[in-house]
Length: 58
Image (cartoon, rainbow, N blue to C red; front, side, top):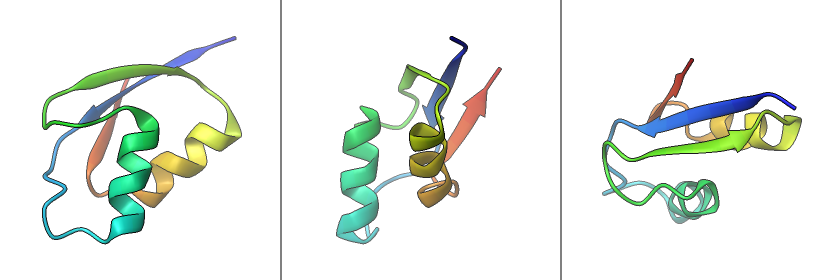
């Protein structure tokens, strides 16, 4: 299955708790950190919730 790379580009400070927990679920804890996940609808949904904090890398 295809994979997707996600990079945290903005800070989690002053974000609602739900968004911080979403970043934790994705494995993102610091700005500049890149994680790789399988490209599933569930992961796409998590990315959509915090799209203003992350960037999808090809």
